[in-house]
Length: 473
Image (tube, rainbow, N blue to C red; front, side, top):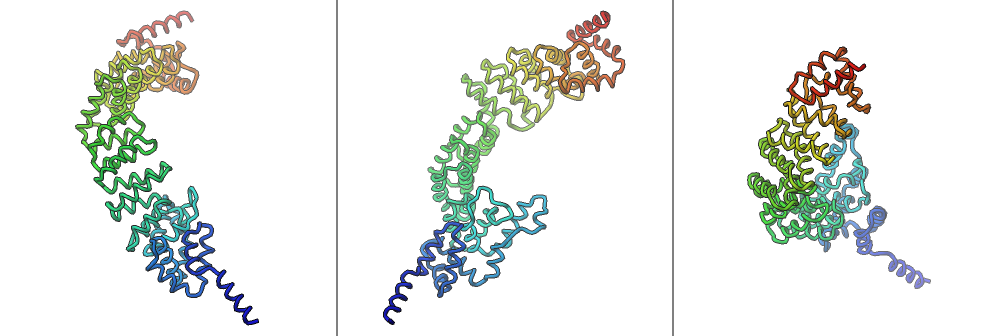
């Protein structure tokens, strides 16, 4: 009987997982299994000494961190429970930026607890957008705690890097030279463009002069979703070898980042010379890049950029002309300073184009560039009248609200004249504009007849037609 009991006890002992086995299972557990396995391990006899030894001597930084967190739980159970049940205060939630305030609070309560911060990151459920009212919503705050005050910090962050892209920033801050290799490895594995973008930013932070780093960043200039980050990283590295590739991307959707990278690497003067060279290139795609790039810059070089775009607005290639007009519209909106003779001539020429889109873009530029504080020159007023009385009804509707920029105090009389002759659409805002004009000029006849004295032949013709209709009536 005693022999049978001994055999049963030995069999039970053999079937019970050892502390080593339990700990190994915990270190590889999924987030949903981790709390249960942790509770089982912490309930075993002799676990405190076992975990203390593992925290100091385990083979991997991951195992040492998990063991350290469990030791901390045994020594300070109240603290561990409070961190487990953390939630932002009502004061933080009432702030204008509650997400930021909650993150600050989380960083404050976990400060000085890198082991528990690591455990929380490892055991956090994998959700796309965790609530900012939970620790999982602030991985960067917890990563900053992991990065502080522990000799294992670098290795721990390296272990978390496959899951948390923000770990790359902390690695670059801790040891820029050492961080390059794990960040490059993470980039090679990563398929998600957003996560890869974070790795690229961090790589730029290292200021590494390694040839493989620069080569990889130049390659990423041509990968969808990483152009902006690669351009900024190359700018941080001051990589002159990337200048030609950056210039080739001045026509891309990420051109603002490319533009700034060129400024950082070669300076505004050389960047300007390279764009000017593109603008006079015999290749249409080069001129198209210039038309895109010339939209960007500072107010002090407004005239130079506007004149260059005016030249491109007359390009033989229709795509270049359209892009130049779009950029000129953007330049005009940013630095409205009226016309130069070249810009005026280019826009008026485009307003008479056979291409519908070109005409409409020219009308937008025209309405933006004309100084609002005084009437436009007669040649410009005449162009505006041709536009609102032409066959392109959409162009006319779009330009009508800007007539006051062309005609100043005469605008109510011009609007009523156009309405009486049937040139004002019944679509909004035409009727509203006319109603306001008629409210200002209840008896508009005299003001309309006075328009005939202006040095605008087309306006005189419109007034003459209006008089004839009144006589006929």
